[in-house]
Length: 534
Image (cartoon, rainbow, N blue to C red; front, side, top):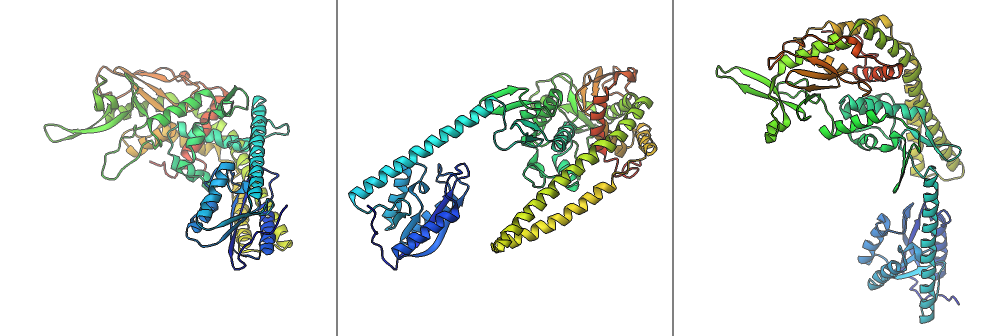
């Protein structure tokens, strides 16, 4: 039988409430506080503070407001803790008892609104039994949830949050979100081209594209995406892996190429010019044909005092485990540039790239950009509607006001971005595009600015051997590298006789992927005849 617990009417009381999002049958924070206030009124104590942890499981004591309460308890800032049930106080019966005992050692009583047993041996025995029941309920529910999630996984069904590019279908299966999937494909392609993460982030933010959580992109936004095997169509949940269990977004070739890029540099920055240093334009793209290591720039002084610049194998430089000789910087850079001009920028390939770029701009980039912005606008309007409903119900706080103002500001920004995207739907002039590619083809290989633009735009990788080099133009990884012979001299002045340009052939699917990379790398649609007029 319950009876009133003797407390000092001047006692200072606090309320602790917790709600676990995984336990939908739990009493809400507001309901817990209401029950505890009723208990405070019955006991005649004054509530001076409320500590609440929202959507945090009781399986851990690493709850910010719980820890704050325990710290305040050690300072004797209150006399009584009021909680809805004992399972609010710990992850299990033992932890709840330990926390209660820690409070007791500070002279603080713990009273439960729904487990208000008297402070006798029988009452404490009944309370411990109730705590045991709560622990059994929690563990049993956790097992039920785990079984349900594993059963879902065996059927390749959606289990909670999904990575960018996917959404839950009507049958609870994982399906593609086409707008997001296009962004994922773009990210993989651009990373495979050694484009710096920070440049990709800036471009996505400028275009109004958000991360899966609705935030802006940053330098560190891409590591998880680039390593996520789900994009190869593999369903993964705990130790369950199902090949083909979800839609594929990127090819195996592109995925593994990106993994190689990430191995070379933790944050692929490609070529970077540093003040006071000579620039090595093939850094991040030139590899040793003997051992596969990157080739990096070095400089040396001759007996006459003249400076000479070379690329050398990183393994040879660091541990002398490779026999590849250094090559002169300027000569290999010119050789690679001439190979790009002769092998990639042919009349046929230029016409192909122009055709695919026109088609891509018309049907893909603008469509997905607009679709992404529209989705953000719908989400904004839904959130605004929910805030307005809360205000109509009389829930008006500083938080709701600030949130409403933020949503209104975001709404205006999204409308402006949508207008800008619609304005960009006017396709680029095909003749201008072809003229720009002609500029690339006929540029001066002695011009450093031209070489930098040429390599950044078209070059993926060069593997350098003693008598030839293999050059990769195709950023999709779908085609074999073109083999370019060089003269017997160590530092080639020209690529020598080259194979026919037909070695670079592309299916319509590969061509579109190539142009997607070209489109993103050069920003041709934004700066025609701007940065690249040499």
